Every structure is written in structure tokens, then in C-alpha cells.
Length: 558
Image (cartoon, rainbow, N blue to C red):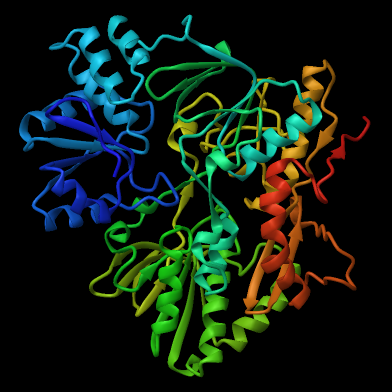
């Protein structure tokens, strides 16, 4: 636990874990303040988990969540009130510690000099110069400064899409000054989490340090984005720093909205409730599958869009396959609770999936949207809205439950001028260029093109964006277009996969000849691809700008 002391009363820290509370107590802290909203990161424990651990050591815990870069006057006042009333010393934390340091700086503006604020935060290792300028400007965030950094291309997001597009840009124009903005220390191969939950991969195999993956020559700005000012070609960072750009690429991924389901946050990781959508919970999925001898297992799917629309089913099929192999399937009632009205959105793959639904005795419950969970009582509540019928709520008891959370664009995207009315970055679905701002592009899960949100989609999108950005820099029109390609390797049993590959409108877009991989039926070849080939392709090719089977399609002549 790397807490940094501002003064004798308060220290700030990056995200802490429940296991850190013993050290925090031993260090003398009597209170902790969480300034990070739950569900912001894939590996993030909930505040409920932190609070429970804090209580064991007699530490007061308070929740004051702040969206990155959105520190308001009421937030500052609330933070000051907590500091006045909580036992000292206090440890405040967020994703990197910057939001907590910002809150403290603003809360002291009326009692300390600017020089004192700057000195104390710098001693803790936080650059609050931007916040100090904000104080000096009467609370206004400056957009112009002699300290502003400027790059040819700024990439927001260091996930699969962000690192891939930066590498693809450099492979086309090696002299570009590129910056990636991302506060995370760890980069995750999220497609591997289904395999972790099925006992095939180890969780540690899906994680690498961000520093080891940032392309050579690319600047890594380890900060969260607060806001966009596209008219000024500026990105505002946490702490009010400004980064200017010639071209901007936006790909921060999406937000898992755990709080939208009442009671879910309090019961995740216990009471038989799990999710492969979180790094630390995928191993718990496998533990529950192994331990379950009899009873009811629920697998949920929320309304679209979600990343990897087949993931909720993958967890179910791999679990059922284990119960078949251990002769327990007959004692387990498997229920698939789907907010939508179809098993899979591309009809060509449904017959193969239905064969496995029947084999495993799965009960399909369409138009069932999870709205609440009572973990200790092992009861889930669903809202059922079927066409032509009155809405109703039903409660279902369970022994094990795999939850796929609702998913939305990150807060700083939804409130930005880049977003459409639904909160997603508004792009042309072929060129992936923003519809309003012609020096901005987007790819990955956060943009509004009607394609599947998968890593395979980002693999095809990155070269398209890179090609078009470089073409724009050279004064030419867009030269590459995206056909909506996405891939969903549906793990229907251990050793076999239905390899769904499709584009806009459900058009089948197979990568391999049918004699090698027939994507409409389960094959061992597709499993080999998922288990052995795709992980090294991801780490060693995609993230390094080696566009294996991802050559951009040229824009059709008018």
C-alpha cells in the first residue's frame, strides 16, 4: 500500500485492496475516504469490500465518489467536512491518488496559501500546478498555459484498441509524436477471462504491466481524462493539466455499471455470486463451478450493448461441460436469464448453440432483465418485459449466479461534446471518423458503430483508423474503411468452439476456408485458435502493430 503523506493529518494513495487494511491500520491511519466510483476499473474492489475490511481494524470508512476531472464545489465542501469530522490521520484514495490530492488542494484554498498547497502536494509526489492555477483563476479551469503539452496524435485509452492503434500509426509514419493517456498500471487480456472462469487459463496469464506494452517512442501520460475541448484541440486531465493535439483518437473502453443492479455490489465475490467480467472474480467463478454439487445456477445477460455478447453464454457452456464431465449435470438446474429476445444476434450460429442448450438441459428465459440481488437470501429479481405483455417482476432462487453487468460509456465520454444522444462517441461507421470534429477518430467499445464490441473488432479497426489518420496528416481523404467485423469464439465445451465471425447487418465474414474452420458448427480447430494462437497474437502482434489478417479494406470509389 503506497500511501503518500501530504501532512500529518492526511495522506493519499492509489486504489487500495481489502488486504491492505491491515497495513493501513498498522501505519496508524484511523479513517479512509474512497474517492473512486465503484465499477470504474476491471480489477477494482468495491467500496463495500473496503468498508467491510476496515471495520475489522476499527477504521472509519467513507464513500465520496468523484468522476475523474469532475470535482465540483459541493464535492470540495463534502471532502472538507469529512476531514473536519473523521478521526485522524486520514488516508484518501482513488485510482491514482490524483482526485484525492485535488480534493484536498481545493478544500484548503481558503485557509492555506497557494505556495503551501503546492509544496505539500509536491512532497507527496502529485503535480497540482493545474489545480493551483484553477484556484488562482477563481475556480475556472484554464485551457491555455505555457505548460501545455502538444502531440501530433493523442490516444485516449491504453487498452487493446489504444495500444494497437498507436503501434499501427508508428508503423505507417515513424516520426509521429504520439501520446497515450491512461492511468492504469496493468493491461488486461480480457478475452481470456472466460477461460479463467472455466479453469483453462490462470488469471495471471491475462495481465501485463502497462509500462511493458506502451510502444517504444510513444509518450505515456499516466493520468485520467477529465474533459474534452475539441474546439481548442485540447484534452483536460485530472488535476487540470492540458494536452493539445493535432489529431485525437478516443478509445477508453466502456464502463461496467455494477450499481445499476440493486444489491449486486454488496454480494459480488460471495454468496455464490460471481462474474467473469472482473479480473479478480473470474477465479471465483471456477471455484464455484468446481464446488457446486446440486441446485440452481443462473447465468444473466443484460440489455445490449455489452462487450463480447457471447460471454454470458460462454460462462454457462463451460460450467455445464464441467458438470457433465464430473457426472453432476443431472442434479443442477441451469437457467439462462436473457434481457433480449434471442439466443444470439446472428441467426446462422443459433442452431449449433441450441444443440448445446438441449444437451445441457438449459432453460432459456428471454426478456428477463436482472434488477436486484439479495445475496444472503440467494434470491434474484428480474423485470420481465415481453412484447405484447404487461411488465412484471419475478424472483428466482439460486445457489450459484454468474452476472453480466449492464454496460455504458465512461462518464467523461457521456457528458462530452463527442457523444451522441445515447452517450457513445459519434462516428462514421465506415471511416470511424467523428461526424462533427474531422480531426477526431474513435474505435473499440466506446464508439457508436453498430458492430460487436470485441477485441477482434478492435484488431480490425486499429489499422483502419491508423491508415485514415496518416492519410489525413498527408492531406488526403480517408483511404480505409471498416466493414463491422467482429468475432465471438463461443466456447460450447472444453475443446470445441463455435467461431462466430460477422460484420454489419449480421453478414458472415469468415477468416478461414470452411474446410478448415466451419464457424457455424463447433470445431476443435477453433478451440486451438482460442487457447493457443490468439493470446500470443494479441500480445506479440496486435499490440505491436503487426496486422496479422487485419489489412485495411480500401474505401470504395464513388
